[in-house]
Image (cartoon, rainbow, N blue to C red):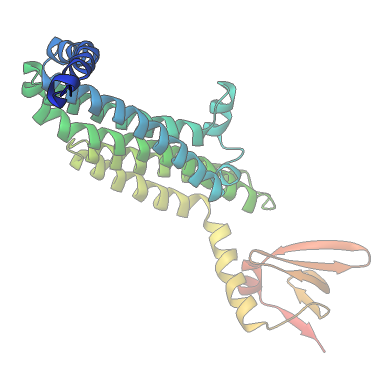
Length: 282
């Protein structure tokens, strides 16, 4: 006697067992999916992706700035010293600023995807203001750092000039850059800057006008020194006399001529060459 076995009947218990095993997992995911609306799940995915992108871009920004040599370039500035006091640096602050910007965009995008009414009402304004605020803060930080660096460079260049008025020039250069950065940052935020532009023009005019009065002798010597360096009517080693001062020329720079006679060195402003004339002995 031959016993026939129906394949469908034989596979039925296995299929039933497999279905029984998969039903709890499917039901778990179904319940988890039904727990929150689909829009909320998409919003959570966007939020997590935003945090990941923020970390990556912040780290990338810091590495790019390090590769460009920015930390060495801004070393010694007041902003960098202040950042060091808080156990951070300018490069780190810029990296965190990029992270916060990306996270803010991700949060607003997630709220919009989740159909939060508050985000719908607020989105149109924030999406325009957030990038402007980000660039304004970056411009302000860069302006402060560049202003500090300009002040240090000008101070270093003028270190050999023995005039009390020269100490004003580095501060004027630094705060001019500060003001320009502040002006550009406000324009990024859409603030009316016409009055500030007029103030800047008046400030620059005052610097030029008062600087021309305060440094009249220095400017005259600089103009005379430029002519002397270009035409070279006398050179190092020549015996000359300027007014009552005579001797051997030791050095000629933009502002003064160094003349030595019998162990004494005379520093003659170049403007005196044009005022009283110069005698060169052959």
